[in-house]
Image (tube, rainbow, N blue to C red; front, side, top):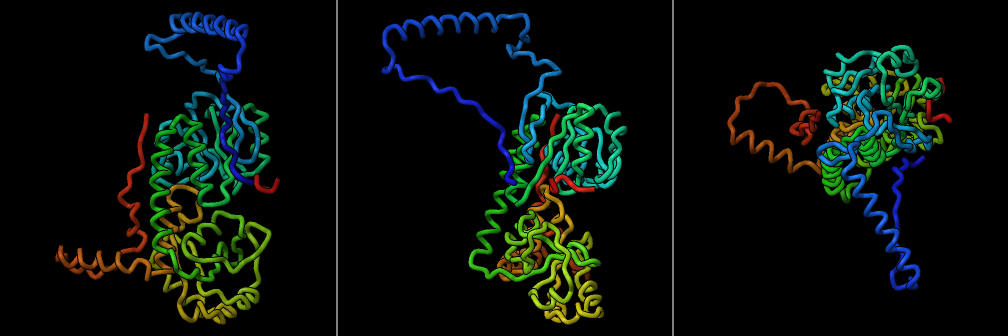
Length: 378
């Protein structure tokens, strides 16, 4: 399902040339009445001294979330609960951490998120803990949250906005939606513009590269991969690869025999350990059936940051890191440039290789700061 945009109303004025004289007189009366009404509003005691209309603290506006549900969202969002790690990361990236009053037990990025009040797991959060935080708005995601949780919160009159990104572009759309809802539109535009710039640079680098046939391993036992309608499949495409899995499910379970038949050029694993590639490759070479894969014998095992598993801002850096693993030739000039800079600086050799996870252009980017069925199985 494609994300829904926020609705915007437009008033189209009639053509003056098409009006008869009587209609023109009526329009003048309407305009005069409008001027009087506007003047009364401007000088009304209900307005602040700055001339800005005061908004009722209980005012709401109806929006469609990314599943098509209508949600009455407060105009002013002061207290937020996040029900997924990617949403927590996004809220921090938008500078809304001071308004974040509740997160799940799995929300651990950035590290500061671990100090926030906990509301339980992503599948079965505590409704009592959420209610105790008195949130103005709860954010959920179709990827891991349950429809029953959303429905229960609705019965408690707590508004829940659900995101449903199905592509990398959809992730950026979700970031913009979240930013608009919490009144951080400027931060959202700055953040997504930054991410889009790097995506454009990545596309330019990989232009002309032949996509690698890859198997993205979500889980090893049982073996689970990705379906074509997931943001991970799109991330794989942007990194210069195509999944060997063609399935209708988002997270299909496969047999090893089928993988051997497909013979992917690369196996892709997500890990928080950048140096685990060689270890993973050796472990696979020792396992029955796995060792029958040419990718395993040739050590074509790519280890990418586990940030790729999360539809949040760090996803773009993880996509680039995977592209570097699959198409090192497209980044050869970068390597030569870094080597030249190191030689010019004449730094002593410490004997320790730098993690490829830290070589992303995002390392210098500072996010702006400021004042059992899941949802997808509808």
